[in-house]
Amino acid sequence: MKKMQDASRWTMFIFGFLAFVLGLVGLKSPKALLKQMGFTAVDPQERAEHDYTHVFVMSSSMASTNMGIYYMLAALLNVRRFFYWTVPFRVVTFSVFATAVAKGRAPVKFLMVAVWELVGALLTGWALWAEEKGKKGETAVS
Image (cartoon, rainbow, N blue to C red):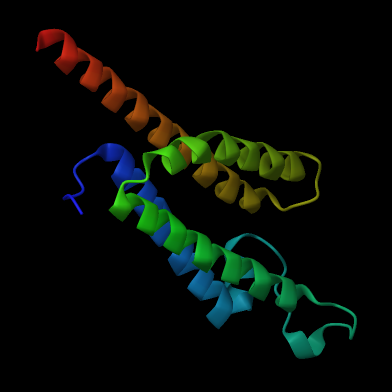
């Protein structure tokens, strides 16, 4: 495994690390994660019997934890094809989340999650583009 020098690898690793940590937060304290994203956080014992909000947060948090590990491993192993695949899908995620906020289905504070996805996608996309451009420049000079 080569030393991580490429910016694209770092954008993937940092995004993965943050997803992993936020997933752990949601597993440990679903209420804290809900509050952080602007949702009303009610203790499980105060919820209706058919309200499975905390179960859904646990499921999403586990997915975030796993996704974080995938991103960090992809960065450490330099799985560049995966890097490229994530960019458009993270832009789609931004669009879905931002639309949810715009339509009043999610609190305004949830827009932070959408922006986080978009900024990560743009940084990774830019890094990949710059690295490809740099490789082409090196080939032309050689």
